[in-house]
Length: 103
Image 1: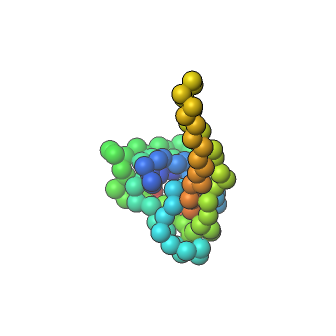
Image 2 (image 1 turned 90 degrees about the vertical axis):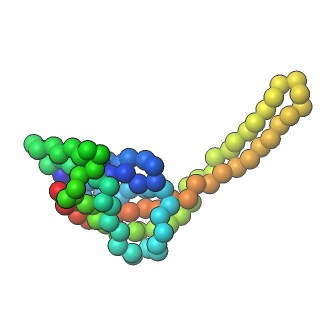
């Protein structure tokens, strides 16, 4: 069984027992979390699609860790102008272990 949830402006395909990295959410490691913005659920045969969300569906799990991704470099450059700008960025994330999908 799997579901598609929406969080942080993005959509994620999740299944029970799976660990997923999403945009940073408030909380600490060990906290329980539920997602009520479920767009689709499927058990292999039956597929339920929301308009835009399913009313009776929710996905629950717990936070395993909060952290930062690896650094990416942002380099701006304009040729023949002597303009160079180098900047780094580390995106914060929350890692969640999916425990239950209620359809």
